[in-house]
Length: 221
Image (tube, rainbow, N blue to C red):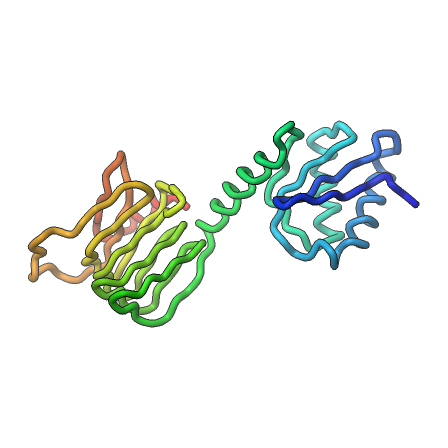
């Protein structure tokens, strides 16, 4: 039985133990065979990965990752160096990377949110409808409302200060981005023209401005 490549799992990712004595070209072939044989078992999860048993150069590490990508359905989101507290390192690195990925992706919700309803998402969300007074949207990413925002919007719920809230009709009861909260004025102007606006965090304050090309260019995902 060939034990030049051993895959060990933990709850946050996998550790790949590599034989330090065989030729690297043979090791690559063994990696391909091992991950191909384990394709169904490993599935298509997003995982962190760590290597043991052999010191790798950056180019060797990239070649191994390429071999894993072609021989399995795994999505390796980050590579972790060996550490005595690897389990904690895995958890933090994977959480940070998935948060980064979630900000650039998102999901859709079609329909109006009524008073008392709460929509919570792990990713950015695009709402095709209105968020009425008393309704709430909570997202770890960005919030885009293709309708009226009159309820509560909490973007960057995991602490992402680059998150934003955008609405075609921005008149929220409360907006929160990361740890900063902005409330609606007690006596909002009834004559204010409806226009697309964006709320973003800058230097500890939430600003709500009309959406234009300059603001779009400044958005950080």
